[in-house]
Image 1 (cartoon, rainbow, N blue to C red):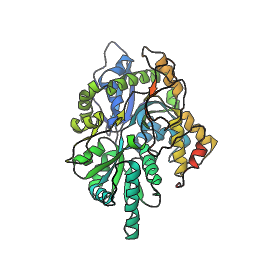
Image 2 (image 1 turned 90 degrees about the vertical axis):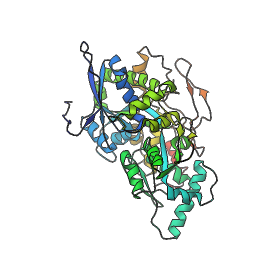
Image 3 (image 1 turned 45 degrees about the vertical axis):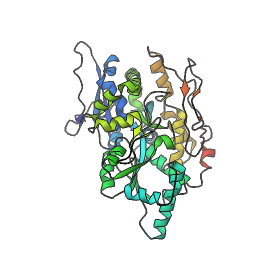
Image 4 (image 1 turned 30 degrees about the horizontal axis):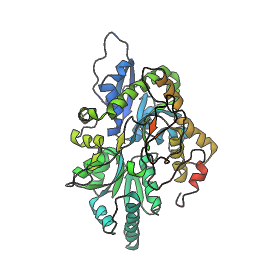
Length: 431
């Protein structure tokens, strides 16, 4: 598709001059300023794209709706996407139907739930002792019930997009505590860069978003980080490389080159020895435009939960590559589909389930990495039980060297991708 001139409203990241002796294929990629866009930034800044004959042109956007629309219109060849976006687009829910695939995961975990300081004081005022999701959820329910009895407006929480893991994580956590997210609170959509201002203005009482926006609220002294995604569902899918299916079909060699470039970039980003350089890289105005000190906290997992307190270390706070983090597990796509059904976004049907399964494309991932000099441990299966691993364990792989880590949901739930209907029937609270 012919590239559209959007120079008036694009913020295009700086890119080194292409090597004159080589013909590089330009790939235009939209992204949101979040720490988990790191793999895309590293691929462009460290030259992993040029190694594959590509020149990545990264375009910063402010909202996920813009990302979706500009991929649909061909302004972008592909994009940094929420994991639910390709599934929603392929099913035609929430917007027009545009088959979209996810052949590569850009990262796992990385989100957090932050609440205003007054709400945090109310939660602690219930007498709750623990910091685990179940205890905090029960305390939040007490606050919700007390507000109802007092005739006060319900609490308002923000998430970034209806088809986001942020939405599903908030709902999963609250519903487990007996809070109906459609009746007991208000859930609103706010773009990530506007979360902190919205909390400060008192428009919302809390939010679920990726970094650095939680840490910025904490640093500003207006929010308290309450929970991390790693605590709610460890090693849960978060961002993907989203590609229109027709673009993927028409440009398969380019897509496979891009996957190889991104895999190398993800390896580099996951290496603790590169954290300082990566934090400085992401801090540039063309990308996140915030303090590298704050970004470094996310990369290290040493998180400041409240201003004036010492940081708390969170294992696996954000994962870019290790433990098959880039592999597009079909089981994770089906889990997202179940959440769409649970919360009334989609009808349960074999057609919808099939559409979701076809969005995540381990076949393309395997082909791209198998035909390379990368020694990638490729899983021997496309799906797995989600939430079943309590610790690291070797799993079946082509070379017998793949280890997966703990992937527990906080409530101990296990998702079997072969029985999504049975899984949904377990939940008392659903739309």
